[in-house]
Amino acid sequence: MPDYQKILFSVEESIARITLNRPDKRNALDDEIVSEFKDALEAASRDDSVRVVLISGAGKDFCSGADLASLQRISEAGVAESMASARVMGELFVDMRRHPRPIIVAVRGRALAGGCGLATACDIILAAESARFGYPEVNIGFIPAMVMAILRRSVSEKRAFELITRGEIISARSAFEIGMINRVFPDDQFDAEVEAYVTQMASKSASAVSLAKSLLYHMDGMTFETAIEAGIQMNAITRMTEDCKRGVEQFLKK
View (cartoon, helix red, strand yellow):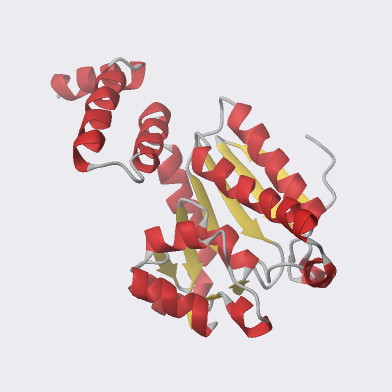
C-alpha cells in the first residue's frame, strides 16, 4: 500500500476502506488529502478483489470542509488559480461518479461544506443519528458550486435551493427525510450497522452492481426514449456476464 500521510487505506475481504485521517483538523480538506483520496480511489478501481469502497473520517467528525489555509488561498487567488483549484475537486466528483464500484460513506459527527459535498458525491450515505449535514458556504460569501450538480439530483430543486442559500446545518434525520441520505442508524449501533450494510452490498454480483451504477448515472440528461435504448443495450450486455448466467442457472434449479 502507498505510504499516505493524511488518509488510511486498506483492502480487506473485498472492501476497500478509505479514512480521512486528520482528526485534529476535523479531517479538513487540503490539496494533499484530496490527492491521496483520489489516488486511493484509483487503486481500489484497479483491484479486482474490491466490490465496495467505504469512506469514513477519523475522530468525532467526518469532515469540516476546506482547511483554513485553503480558505485563505480562495480569498486571495486569481481567476486562473481558482479555476485550477476548483477543477481538482470537480474531477474528484466525476471520478467518484465513474468509479466501477459502489462508494458508501459512513458519517459520524459533522459533514459540512466540502465535507458534505464529498459525502453527497458518494453513491450511498449512511449516517449516525447524531450526525449533522450542511452547506454553510453562503455565510462567508462563498457557494458550494460544483456539488450543486449532485445535490439537485438527490433532493428536490427547492430543497437544494434552501440548503445552499440559507447555509443551515440539518440533522441526519432531516437529511434522510428530504432524500439527501440513505440510512440513519443509532449512534451506539452505527459501526455494526455500517459493517452489516457494506458486507451485504459486497455479497452482490460485482458485474451487476457495476453495470447498474454505470447505466443509472449515464442516463443523466437523456430523453426517455434514449434512456430506454441505453437500457436495452445494457440489458443485453448484462445477460452475457458470468454472474448473470450463473445466477439464472441457480434460480432455475430451485
